[in-house]
Image (cartoon, rainbow, N blue to C red; front, side, top):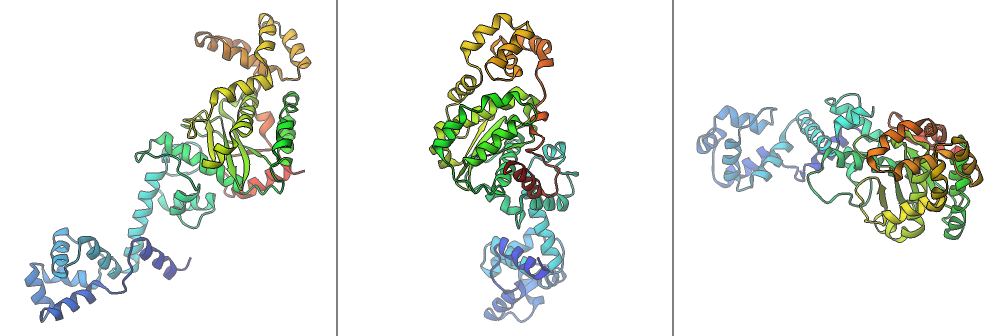
Length: 397
């Protein structure tokens, strides 16, 4: 953007529409009231003549509010209108400096800088020029202010957002931005989608390529799935979106567990299966965070449990949970990864026992990294669109 265009944009954002300077308006008013000179005006207003001259010349200086009140009374304008006219009189570098302050305030209001620094998205919490550039490039927006409109629906109604809220919003907008870049040519086919769900579970046994294979199959029936790195302060396990009129799922590597990854996938698939119309009305649902849609989470959890490893099967293997050979054999017979059985077993126990059991069976709860390496996005890339393009190449093969 060239300097003149940038200056015009700043004038517009400040609500400055008149080409008249403060001196132009004061001269008109002086003539109307037969005031012969600036010195006479300064005496009339009770303002030092040097101060008045600097204001009229638009010199970069601090102007006391009392002087502005006096001038606004003389001009019969509101303080706000007087300030806008004065700003239009200032030298361009001063106006840009005002806009820089406005942008910095916007950043502080809309972003949790501590959280963004902790995930490596920004390097400094005080270099607002660099922060602005990082955000604009990452979200592919023309102005920092466009961040507010990046997702075209309200996320939170309250005015005072906590750091957790701000990180949730950042996570949502980041995910939405990635999904916008996934141009899936396949139309969503509800019937093919529903018939596919029952065929997914056995692929959990393929640690390296099972998830990728399932994501490819979902892509063919018009459902986009990618994994986005977990963001601190969000507690988001997954999310369901409608982007470009297609259902989309984002999974996270929260807790880094393979079994939770598959559970979250089925949880989100349930929302597409049952809640598609509700999703279309608001376009986003988060699992693991405060629910913006109030969808039936219990149903989604039961659906995921049933599709992966039902309570009936769990009741059968539970007495033999300490016999890894039997658990592994039973998992093979029912086409499910062993870690899912152990994960469900731990979850079903009283919270007082879960920590102990996690330590006992942790060696069977493998990392999710093995499954998501081809479909995971992060926050360190300077070109996230290229990152999504590479993922899309893997998925659409």
